[in-house]
Structure formats: structure tokens, C-alpha cells
Image (spheres, one colour):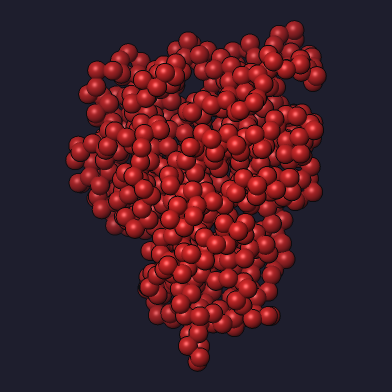
Length: 581
């Protein structure tokens, strides 16, 4: 089912390198220069009914599995991140809050808006307070007529002027404390004229086509039943829904790095330096291999986290925040490294490689959009001492299907998501299980022992954290512990993806060399010396990058080839080959 959905989407997008394709790279760049959404892209997503992927099946949609949603949206981000955010994620974020806390009427109305091709937006942020939504001043206080009155601004909202429905985070009580805010589901059509003012558009360096705007409400009346769930539970609803979006959005943006790798591989194939192909140069091959390895790490951690939402929903608050931090960090670093392969070409905004600089700029908001990386670490940090004293001493293993690609999953249950893991972390226990297995040997086992030593040090240092280290005023060293924990989690995901998927008839996935490269890269990020990477490992990975580029296959774990795409060998010789030097 998911293969057919993604294949249909890829057919509609067509070959991105075809200059005549209305949804190809050339058209995407033209829309970016104009600061507009790609009209042809929006039409094809309308025809595909992409919004149905954001709606649960009981309400007429296709949202059955989070990993499937990610795979669909990764294809969109691969072609145009502005479509991924502006058409897709911008509506997904508010919808998840309605599925998590809305009543039957609210859920039905949100589904009707999306399935009819409409847009929804979420209003969390106010520029004065950034990611500190608990300090939001936007209010929805009761009026004399029993209705709530909306007052204040919400800013930097994708599609603020184009959306039919809104989910707004508002102060619903003047009392201090965590129960003073709620979320409200509001439809523009229900608001009196003049009560809502659209603020001027914000211009941005990345995601230029996404229409970022603001909304100002002036004593705007809405029914009291606009509140999602019980009044005062806005923060709890947000923390539960963030587990879906913090998992899904970074995983979707892995598609940006896929395009970056594709462009870099094309460049090395087409360039000759001092009489020698760039593709054959060891230094260039090492950069491609490292970026590809980082992509695989991101894919492993994102996939395991997405599957945990179904299988370990009580622990997802921990994994989602760790994955958001680690995945976005790796993606940005990998794209930056690939820019050095392209040299001066990486910042040129047109021509055959112009799509790279657009994707590089569009990736930047992934690190701070929705919730910043440091905010994610601040969510993980308070849970670490309890894990060190309890959770990490429990060797209860996670279900094996967390690591088995394509294995069946139970339905997505928003009700079972918890705002804290309660001292449970079964994924971390899977590291010792991997070591106990007889499968990893040689270089892979040596690297696993390095990761295990880091895990032990993290546990010891987390147990020594003081209460002052667990607040927003935490020392940098304390926050780094949360980052180190995220790195251990990524290593656990990688080695177990390799262990549990060797029978999938995928020669590359069953090859331990990619896992060796992944653990080595993660060890480096931990500040530990993994030793020199074996040359045959780097050569295998760089060769895989070029092979996938030439065969028009994806660079992720699925290793799929878009339907109807011709390999490089099937197409005419490149017309842009140049010699330099």
C-alpha cells in the first residue's frame, strides 16, 4: 500500500532533472526566486490528495502508520522543501493536536477541512517569547456573554493568510501555574468581520515560498466549546502532540539530504579536475561516504523512533525529543560538508546545481522551527537522573518489531502517549543485547564496546546531576549529557537495524560495513576516538552513493528506485560536463 502511494507521488513529480518538467528542479528554483509556492507542485499534491495522509482512517483519511506518513512526506521534501512544509507539515502540526484532544465534532470538522483540500495552521509562537510558549500572552478569557474573547498576536505562521482552520495556544486563566493555558480549534469562517487582522508577511532566507505571516485578534468572540479537551490542559496536549511532530518532521527533512547527495554525486560524475574524475578522488569519496553514513544514521534513528510511537508510546516523549535534536544536527552538518564538494557551485542560485543551495537554505529552519534543538534537550534532561537510577538498570528488551523495517504495527494511538517516560527506556537496553549477540564481530564489536563505555559514563554522570541542573538554567555540561544520550540512542538504532534486517534480500543493508561506518561517525560525535576507518568501508559507501545516483535509487534505508526513472546509463550523456584545472 505505501509503495503504491509513494510511487504515485513520484510519478506525478516526474524526473527532477528534466528542465521541461513543471515540477522539476528548474521550476522549483524559479518559484523560490519569486518567493512563491510552486503552483504546479500544489496542483499535483491536490490531485494526489496529500491531506488524506494527515487524517486518521476512521475519519476518512490514510494516517495509519507514522513511518508510512514519513516516507510519503520525505518524497515531497526531496523535490521541494517548501511544499513539504507549506503544503504538508504546516497542516499536520495543528491536526495532530485535534486528533490528540479534540471531541467528536472538532475531529470531524478538522478532517472535513483537510479532506476538502483546505489548510490548517497552528499558533504557538509569539516573537517576544520564542519557544517559551508557557509565557504566551495571547489570551482567550471569558466575556460577559459566556463566549471566549481572543486578544493578542500569533506570529511567524506558515499559511497564516491561506488557512481555513486554526489551532491556537492561548492563556485561558489569569492564575499562575501550568494549568493556565489551553488550545482552541477555530475556523476563520466563524469569526466576525474585523475581529481578525492578517499581519504583513515575514520574508525569510530559507523556505522563501512558504507564506509566513501573523494573526492579530481584537476582542474576537469564539464559543467556549472551541477549547480542545478540558480547559487548562493546553500544555499537556502540546507535549503529547509534539511527540508525533518532533518525530515526523526531522525524519521528513531527511529527503533534503537525499537531494543534496544526489546533486553532489552528479557533480562528481560530471567534473574532471587536472585530468582526473572527481568521483575517483579519495578525499571526495570520503566526503560522500560520510554524508551518506550520516543520512543512514538519521534514517535509522528516525525510523526506530517512529515505530516506537506505535509500540512504545509510554516512552516516546524521551525518544522524540532526542531524535529531533540528533537528526537535525546531523542533517545540517552533512549538507554543509557536501557544499565543500561543490565548491563555488554550492552558492550559485541557478544552473544545473542551483537546487543544492536552495535545499541547504531550506534545511536551516529544521533546527529551530516548531521547537528548537535546545528545547528538545531541555525536555530530555529532567528525565535522565531517574533513568540513571532506575530505567537503565532494567534490561527489559523492546519488541523486535521496533527495528524490523516494514513489520506490521498496531494502530496509532494518541491517547497512549505520555508526557514522561516514567523512568522507562527499553531501547537503551537493546545495546547490551546487541553485544551479547554473536553476530557483531571484529570492527563492529570493537565500536560497540566504545559505545557501551560511553553509555556507562553517561549513566554515571546523569546519576550525579543536581536539581539545579534540570531547569532552564542548566549548565552547558548538563545539556551536553542529553546530547550524548541522543548519540547513544542513535548507535542503538543503527546496530539493531542491521541485526534485525539482514534477511531482507538487500545486499547493502545486510553488509556490516555501513553499520561500522555509522558507529564510527557516532563515536566521533561523542568525542571518543573510533580509530581510523578501514579503507574498504569508505570505498564501499562512496561506491554505493555513486551507484544509487546513477541508478536513480533513493539514498535511505528503503533503497527504492522511483517508478519509470531511467538510470544514468539509460539517458543521454550529460550536457554539462566541464573540465577545470
